[in-house]
Amino acid sequence: MPDSTNWHDHKVEQPKNDAEYLERMSHVIFVTGLNWRVLKNKWPGIKQAFKNFDIQKVASFDELEIEELMMNPDVIHNLAKIRAIIANAREVQKITQEFGSFENFLSDLRKAGEDVLRENIEKRFAFLGKATTAIFLFSVGEHLPKAHKEWSERHKKNRP
Image 1 (cartoon, rainbow, N blue to C red):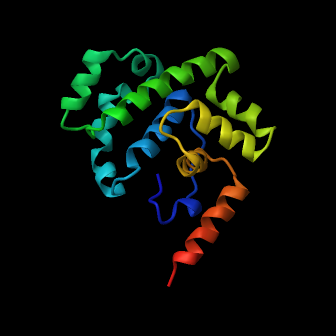
Image 2: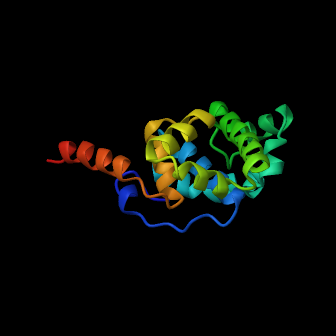
């Protein structure tokens, strides 16, 4: 995953399965408000605690497992983000039931254009706003010319 200063230039491979989509989404959610280096160091433990982002396993987490995640020293202790990732796993389950895979879902939305794609992701998934949705989509290989232009213009203003 790119850090916040170069994500727009970062090239990534398309995820190979739904678990990798959930992992990328979760990474974007956890890094929000954190130093990316902190997350990079904790990521192996987070990945293990979230069962390698296996959709079925994460979607079935109950309150006891949430408490265990909150006590796990390898996990970032943010209850709202942990709950969001579990809710997002459940949403991915719904999507795969309807479309067969997360990739098929994205492919279907792609046809409707960038705005529809971004708005749908932002609406369906917890803890993804306008900027984090764009970062997630970039991280899975989506080409978003409008989002890239918005980011570039915003950061040109902030440069000395």
